[in-house]
Length: 163
Ligand code: FES
Image 1 (cartoon, rainbow, N blue to C red):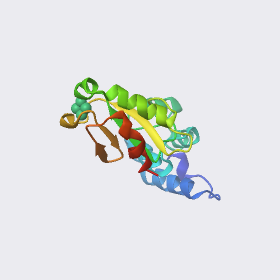
Image 2: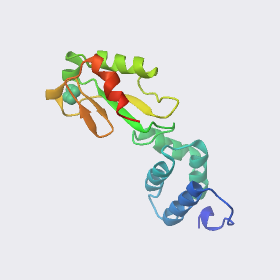
Image 3: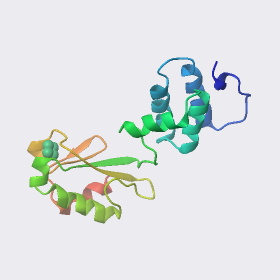
């Protein structure tokens, strides 16, 4: 039996309670780690170190294994993410049509570099390979919204729409 089933009840935050519930649901199942990590990331928005330690303890798995899985899969994030994820396409079609200049402009506007998050957690900026809208190159996505045929000058106006 894993440790989570033996722990005393304590006063915990809402997130901790949710996490405990998820771990409790999966803790005696094989292959629990990935679904627990996914649920934990849904709860916290990313995977803080303390959460990984708790998961490791409660699932009776070495912390090194938990980190190994988290760092292997791109879906998991060890740092807080912004409310709006900006994906700038640097695939071939977008690159040829000025994707790098669009990225540069966004970096300048936000004061962050590719792969980073603004301090106010408003935006996370990521460059990606082709997002399947080559006809609209150069393209960015903000959340689920696609913005195509972009000129760098349009960037400030687009960013303003996302609070
Ligand atoms: S290369 Fe950018 S959408 Fe295909």
